[in-house]
Length: 156
Image (cartoon, rainbow, N blue to C red; front, top):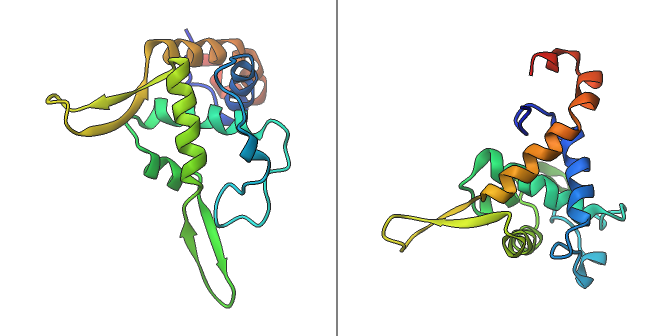
């Protein structure tokens, strides 16, 4: 069976975003029409479904890198900040977007917060079995498209 590790992100994320749009617990907040996705951007996103695309990318990164927290996820979505005549520096993405998306996916039952054995330290967020199942189902459904685009994936 094909897993989400086998499918490239440029094929998996849009298909996963379409699946997340059907989930009523994951929806774009009202303020999302006006915000930038980080300090390194000049304008808000122009795509209509950018919230679901970002949520799908966050879900994939939690599955691949988890347990992972808000700060590390915002760094994953960062980029170079233009500082005028000074050299560019790395800038983090919006933590509010990442945090809100993670909270919505927790309400939907796709991810959960992992604590240490004593239950006192938050280690980060990980996939639940439902989240793993969703990622693998989407990966299996787009497998044929991935094989057409990347012929080396036939062995998976």
